[in-house]
Image (cartoon, rainbow, N blue to C red):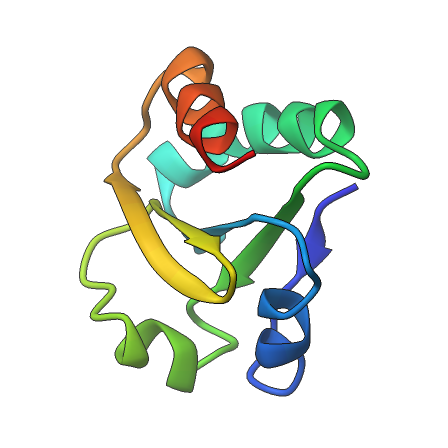
Length: 104
């Protein structure tokens, strides 16, 4: 199951010791709703290998600003706590999985 990112727990999630993917989204965003089932599937498939997390941009101020999130959905990929890649827009599951696999 995907984790929910907040300003309070973001560093804890980043320092989990596993690669991390964060989906920046909002409830009013159509493309965000379109990829939500894909993100949920990936969270199940990568359980124990990578952390799949979601950050609602309407509920978090600091993190989206810190990473310059201007369009959603935006997927950020972290390894060892460092940002290493990003995808913007509703992209196919295979493309997202390829980015996660590159971190493993």
